[in-house]
Image 1: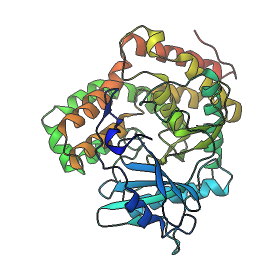
Image 2: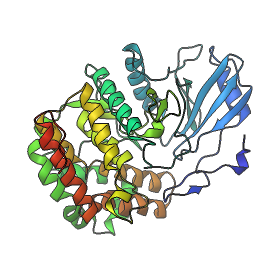
Image 3: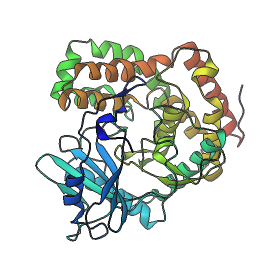
Length: 391
């Protein structure tokens, strides 16, 4: 195993970089895990997660392996974690393929200290096949994409009767509030105004004009379809490296779904659009021909797998296409706020604002982006007849 001083985490520009948060230490997790009867302390740290927004490790304990995750309290406090844990407990009770949330002797699943908030989970079933993959990298095969689509549909079915309120405002949570409105501007302005660091940053960037020109034309196409989208809790970060697999084979099945940090009440179609956005486009290397940038075969395999379990009606299928250029926007604003308020980094905030919030939507106005939307519109027309037609 690599030493901590040799390790880096996923960066924002297709790179590996120094972590924003210190890695977990053995003394730290030993003290924590002595409170958990299913762990009883820590023997050694087996791995360090490369994900950038928190610190996490697989830890060997006297009673087996567990997964420990530490958040800064400015990102996720105890109440924020409990929102996620209630969702996981609901899924687990309905046979969902998610890890157990472990509890202390006192029955607590979220442990808060002066600076940090901790959670402990059982080890997910299966193989962490995509653990080292950088953001927005494709599936290893179309069969993996198909299996992921089926797993996402099963996940959504398990949440049909979960009626918890939306999460309260906090960092790094995906929402569908602004663009779910017939008139998004009042909610967008309220979102920015409630985050003073973000409001100050955007005030110097003519953000209203740029947003109006780049995102609002897509919202105009979504507006007449909004009534077809039923609110539901969703994962909101469904990509290959948040899945555990039965094997490394091309036809492996999904064994577990992990990482519910972005989960909130959006819609199943929004979640499906997020899965396409996360897995279907090489956002960190957009130069090239269509087939080099867009993994259309993976997108269609994911959709096919999803509809084998949970078919979309015509309105939902067309709403999925209309949502795709907008689906990352609200989380991008949350990222920009996190970079400004918590990390105090204008450089990283610029990547979230220019690269993600504006840049992803702008790409859908490019030749490759328009071509993808045309393919998906053809698919949506076919979905109305239970077919999958590509023009």
